Length: 251
Image 1 (cartoon, rainbow, N blue to C red):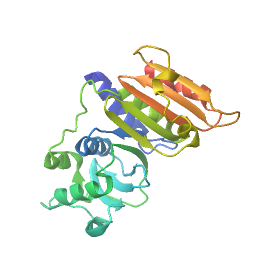
Image 2 (tube, rainbow, N blue to C red; image 1 turned 45 degrees about the vertical axis):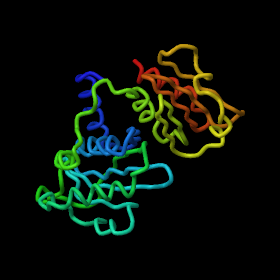
Image 3 (spheres, one colour; image 1 turned 30 degrees about the vertical axis):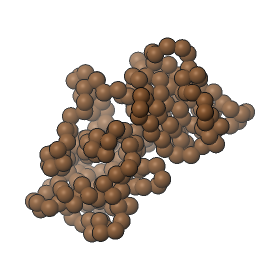
């Protein structure tokens, strides 16, 4: 992704944040560190008070209260000793905080390689005096980069999943040695053992196919771009919309 494209994507995320009907976006990483860098980039886009909800397969969820690109409070599924962070006002002046938050996210999402992030209103008053800890401070403490990797594979597929939003009932992603999935779908289960590329036109270029496995049943799509292949189950009757969104993200 070029510098201009990365900036445009970040501006689009800022514009979407907290807007009615915002569908959220897929976050992926080939390691826990890469995934946490993607989470921090989401926090870094939020200037106004917002709630950032992060979901993983299996029902794991963390809700982050954010304003001014700072993490104010966390609530979620880390469990155990990490519950001490739940609902606590986070103070970036606490030297132990970054390590505690790192352990908190590790406990919740350590095995995940794909997350879904969505933004909504923060339904409490916050002010400039609320301390919080900035995304950049956490990135420094965790040894991560806030800037996205230039030319990252999968940018088109990430954008496509974000555009599909809540219409996506389940998805599976394959790319080289990397794979990720979220949700459950009988329609996708019926495709077990079918090569995703067998549903697409021959070649390595960007392509997308939509089909229905039964009349009135879920729409199944296959999409390929940037070395990544996506299989997804959508709500019935979504084929035309899915094709239109694909044309949008591929330009």
